[in-house]
Image (cartoon, rainbow, N blue to C red; front, side, top):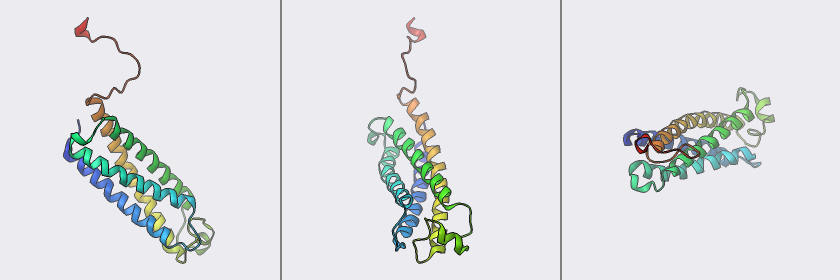
Length: 169
């Protein structure tokens, strides 16, 4: 079983990363004059979903009475790991590895070319991408700890039928 302080610290770290992501992507959306690509909107969806998940997961980490069924934190952690990984990979792939000072790159990149300050938007997207990876790593640790805690808390991780215990034979 995972200790409560470790779980709360991990959730606080995730909260910080998601808050930074939400601020960066929100600013990217606010500075666009020509609309936003669907990837930017997906990034904001992931941040909002993660933040909403954290409201429940903080309560579940604080007290076992809020958990309900032990599978709920495992499912929420798994969904966040998946969504954050997809957002991190897609944002990194769309940005590419270029210098934000290169005006030719920022003008022709579909994530950066809709802003008055393309260089600033590029830097914010690069920072958001880095924080997506940090959040994904933290949430992967939470997912593993939730799996270990769920296995010890009565969630049957094995599929199929098991035979009687040795003491019953």
